[in-house]
Image 1 (cartoon, rainbow, N blue to C red):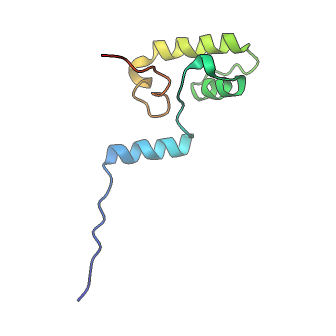
Image 2 (image 1 turned 120 degrees about the vertical axis):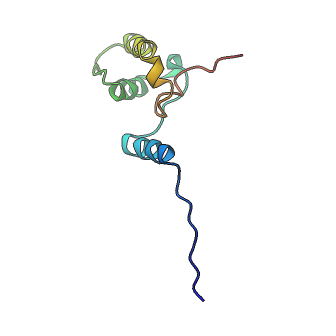
Length: 89
């Protein structure tokens, strides 16, 4: 008698999200106001904002502006959705 293991495959959408997160790095979360310079630079680079020499306050403003302008897509992106505050209902 032979046994065949039944392995369920992950949903394709979850598989793509997991692969993208693994390939591109970890997810970002928390308030920008609590980020240190190196953390803000890392977030900025992930958003294609390449200004590592900018002052921290300016970098936070640029990141926040980018997050606001691209909220529709970034708020559901696994890497960036943690940067959006939780909404109370």
